[in-house]
Length: 292
Image (cartoon, rainbow, N blue to C red; front, side, top):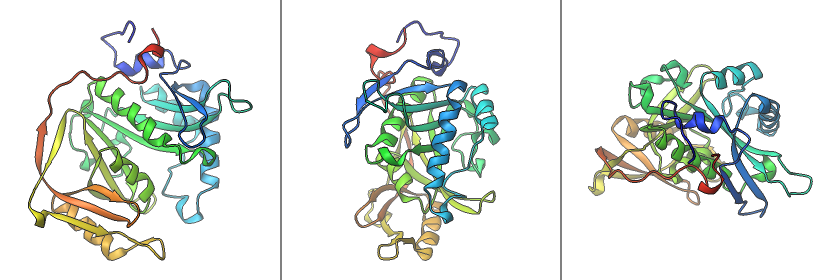
């Protein structure tokens, strides 16, 4: 890990070395080499260009609520407050593509509920903001989709947050954006709440992964429900199923598995939360390339 300043969060160590990678790999579909690193204010033009590209390629109906657009001023202040942006880049040696930004993720370390960026901060699982890390604005360029870059960045985020002493990983996603919240569920998150965002009129689900504990679920067959959320022919959210989802979440059910073929969401009744044995927390990325 190198010489860490124990007085500072782990993320400060990596931000000092923003242009050194902490994960190197190969894209599973394209076979292209990539690396992940922290980004700083010198990278903002790349973040804005990626955002513009993704917005341009969204359906008109999705432009207002799938992504809350960030401008340069926002991103600059975002970094100054001690938050982080990680990016996935094409590795050097990729002809014509080296150092191209393929994906990015904003990581929020809120000091107040408002700074969490969530539409309804009352749904946060803990009032102590020091325990929480929120991820938002996960964008993947169309050219590089299908390579699990979102999952790879999410895995890095979870390791960094856990090593930084965080207890809760949280995100808010539009309910009809099944691809995004499906990835979170695949990565061990539970859909635990539903909210409404008056800023853009969107209905959202909240996903949560405890980093030092685990959710407990009922074994009663009556406490397991599969909900068909989407019309497979029309490809749209079924409103009656949406209302049923809200009711079940209010009753303490969690969405724990999403079948992408049937588009059915498996929900289980949560009965509590329990500590998990404290293990050695893996360092973010590959140890041999972490800045010293």
